[in-house]
Length: 369
Image 1 (cartoon, rainbow, N blue to C red):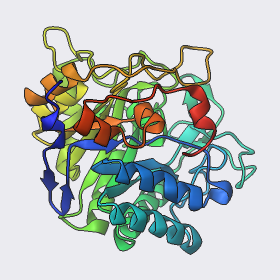
Image 2 (image 1 turned 180 degrees about the vertical axis):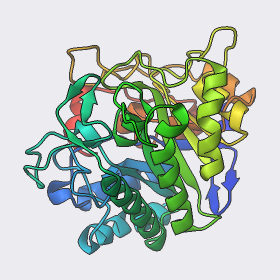
Image 3 (image 1 turned 45 degrees about the vertical axis):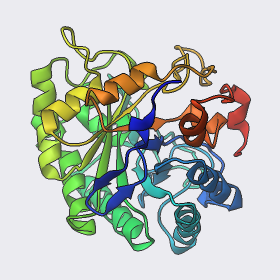
């Protein structure tokens, strides 16, 4: 049997106390009719907490802005009815001994006009682009920017108010914050465009506003990625020096934990080093880092161009993951599809070295279980 004990060491940061290093990754499920978490959502998260996940990061949940959503039946994180429903999720997770952080989300230019319930509201983007070179979305004004910054701050304050244990800002995968980061979709000529420093200004304002809203001891997580759903080969920082220039202002603004999204956790980020993206992020910032990307499965999760559903995968060895963690490469491990297939993934890894784990099958996305 593999010695997986390092995955089950406690983790502590500020007010956040975790029983282990295993995180449920945020995964959009499109199972919240009316944009309100329901009984099935409560049970979905409760089962993962009971199954041993130390921290649950929720699916993306939309902040209070008219164009934040771009997909059917995703939950919102504003309005008393919706927040009361999230309170039920939080309480259920806590009753099982878990901890929970909502992922605050604005899809930006990924929104198409006509998406319900907002209807004929176009997507908002830094330069009106969803993909490089094609202006077909609303170009954000400075007033728009201020409104979105305030919406993230309200969401963070509400997260703390209803008893969440941390908050994650979604700054990855080609959504709004990432559209500001990415030179391909940000060609602004004001202080929010141009240099990497300027393109990071929007995120920095959000991070500072969130920090002010939650206080110094409430952990703020930032999820970020080099790749974009619009372009898997895109890279914000092609070299370690550029990565440092990108990360340090975000760290200084108030990020406590960096959630470093990759398609395959085992891939090195730069030539000449075995460190993955989380490893480099931890090395540069000195802050805790979460690794993610096909953990526990033998096939990466993203479809190839032209495909629309996530890849299936069989259970896979955790030997390399454990070795990297033992080497101090990263602090926490986010598990996605394997935890959809196995709500008790963490407990099975702890108790039986993963014996009896189920494969992930595409049909599992059709309902919450």
